[in-house]
Length: 123
Image 1: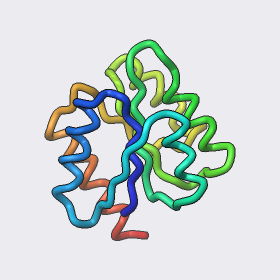
Image 2: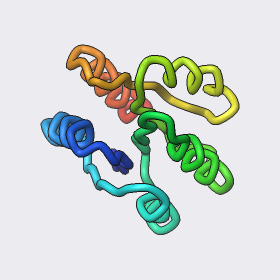
Image 3: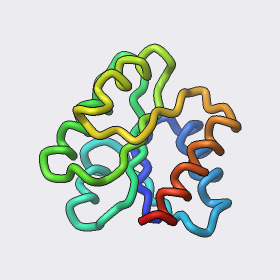
Image 4: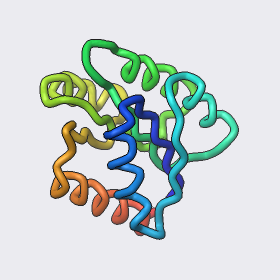
C-alpha cells in the first residue's frame, strides 16, 4: 500500500512513519503542504495521511485541492479531538476514511493500521 504522509509536526510525523514502517505492506513517503500534495499528480497513492494542526485550516484546504482531481484515494486526518469532530461532520462530502487523534494513542493507531490492511486485502 502506497501512503503519502503530509504532516508538519515532526513528532507526530515520526510516530506515524515509524509505526507504519513496521509493516512490510506499507510504503510511506513524507511531504508537507502543497508541495507534498503535488506528488499525488505524478504518483498513485492508496492513502494520504494529512495533519490538520492547531488553528490553521491547511489540512482541509489540501483535502479540497485533492478532491478537485481525485475522489478515490483514502484520506486519514491527524488532528486534535475538537477539530476531529468538525472534520468527521464533512466525512461524506470529502470521502474521508478516518480521523486519528493527536496525541496519538497506540491502540487507536493500530486499529487504523488494521482497517487499512483489511482495505488492502479487499481491493
